[in-house]
Image 1 (cartoon, rainbow, N blue to C red):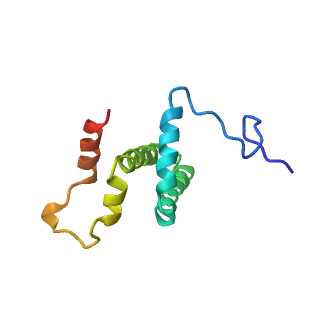
Image 2: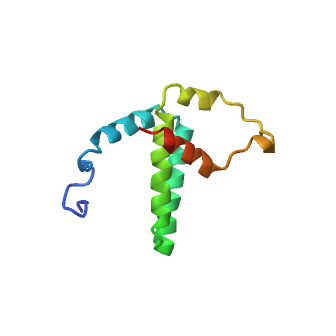
Length: 114
């Protein structure tokens, strides 16, 4: 038995990213290569969970939220010094008054994006 993609390409052969996205893909892969095994596992777990939720419900929002999460993660982790800062950050719980809603963080990051 031979596996192929739905467009007929042999299994394992990569498709070209959409025009203009090649540079972003290369950058994201470079960031991905710097992730630890645990970080890669968490990223995959979240993406796979979103796919399973979509298959169960057929609600596209599961996929779009996952795509947005991965996009933000790759962008944030790709900023100079961020990867190490995340790894060096204390893991103790912070005081409630220091918590910031995730939506606010994403909004702040989008404002800084080129």
